[in-house]
Image (cartoon, rainbow, N blue to C red; front, side, top):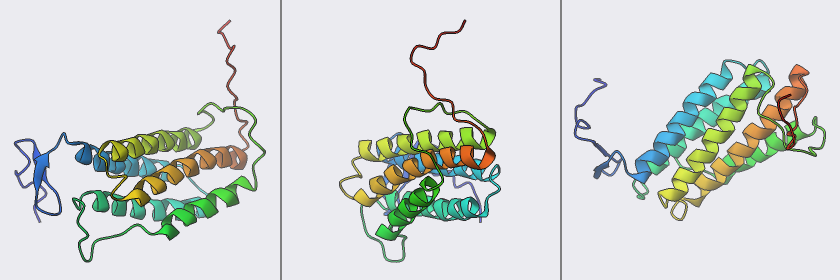
Length: 183
C-alpha cells in the first residue's frame, strides 16, 4: 500500500463519505488535533511505569483513533465504523475516581511542573482541551455530542493523572502564587 496518493496536493482531502473538502476546514482541524493529541499520549506513555496507567493509555489511544474516525465520517453512520459508547466515558470516570482516592484535596491551582511524565500529562490535558474546542468549532458537538463528552472527561483524566504522578513519584505539587515575583 502506498502512503502517498497525491490527491491532497491541491489542499483538499476526502472524508469517509468521499466528499472533498479543504484541509483548512474546521472539521479537518478537529480530527487533526485529536491525532496530535494521540501522538502526545504516545509520548507520555514512554515515561510511565505503572501498569494501570499503561493500560489506560492503550485504551485511550484506541479510543482516540475511534474519535478521529467518527469525525471523518462526515456525519453519516457507516456500518462497520467505530462508535463511541457511554462506557468509554464511564471508564475514564472510574479511573479518575480511583486515582483521586490516593490524592489530597486540592485547595489551590497547581503549576504544570514536577517531572517529565507530569509535564507530559499536562501537555496532553491542554492539547485535549484544544481538540475539544476544535470539535465544537466544527459544530460536531451537536451531531456527535459524546465526542465532546469524551474529550472533556479525558482532559480531566490527564489533570488527575498529573496529580497522581506527583503522588507516585513523591514529587511535591507547586501551587500557584498570584503574588510571586522573581527576586
